[in-house]
Amino acid sequence: MTKNTSTTPAESQPTEAAPGSPYYGMYGHYWKSNRDVPPTKWLQENKKLCACDEHQASQWPMEHAIITIPPCAYKCPYCLKFDTLETTTPQVVKLRAHIKRDHLKKKPQDFLGLSVTPGRVTKPRTP
Image (cartoon, rainbow, N blue to C red; front, side, top):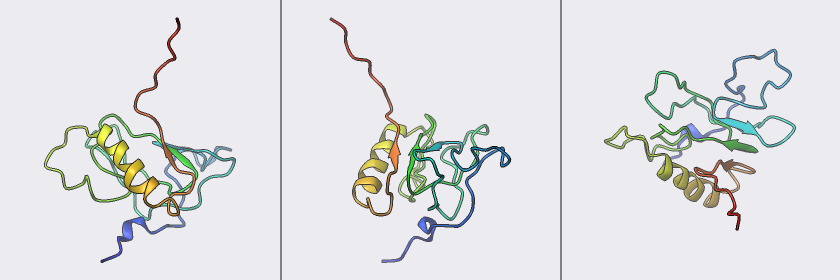
């Protein structure tokens, strides 16, 4: 079995627009830190999850962050499973389930404190 080098942590900084901001490192385009300090473990390469021009490639944290999957996504930020699909139609529901099942539950030691935002938030029913 070969080691996927795309999941090797890197020492680089997250993708953000304003490095002079006091919150630099606390959020990116599709993620937000869930602690008072920024994540320290990152994927080595930037990855784009869709073909949209308005969405750019981002560097993805591997710890202590909340990931938001854009509704047009059809690629996994952490592996190549969805990259070889023959379709470019959004796979956001399957992708969210894949990340939770194959990354967060199977390898929790590699993704400490990482979570994915729910696809649909339901409100409690009132009688």
